[in-house]
Image (cartoon, rainbow, N blue to C red; front, side):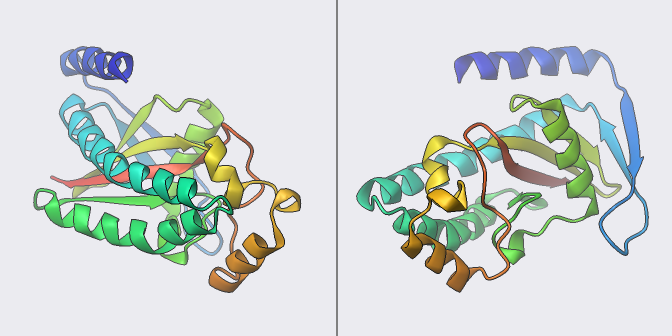
Length: 202
């Protein structure tokens, strides 16, 4: 953690000395126009976004690990993700400065409320291809910035996001009942799971 923080600070210092941007255009999801993503290097926004992202992780992770530890079936952890984590996210957003918010999304999402938009899809596709969980990407959206942090699939997550053939029947039934259109299964440890996105208004 300290090493990652030091690397972020060092990168921030370098980026303050030079400003550059990269634009990517690709086809967005079905029935949508082409989407252009403007990547920028902005040390101040990157640092603000990472601080907010780490704050949310710090709130949610202990609660999730506690739920998984207390219920070995994993169903308690899934329940926590589907209810408590959503509420914790709302509460955390309410504590952020005006014009800032945090959300989660994924290419293979479970909760329809976390469905990605066209920009999310392009950025996540890039992060997945880069295969780096240390990289932060900053996107200029015009009236705001988005800071994207990739998340890996950790071993405890596999209890409800792993291969369906290895899941218990009770878990599969619970997922199907809560999320009939679920996409978030058949992951392996260290796979790209999704992102946390910090949005910061200009």
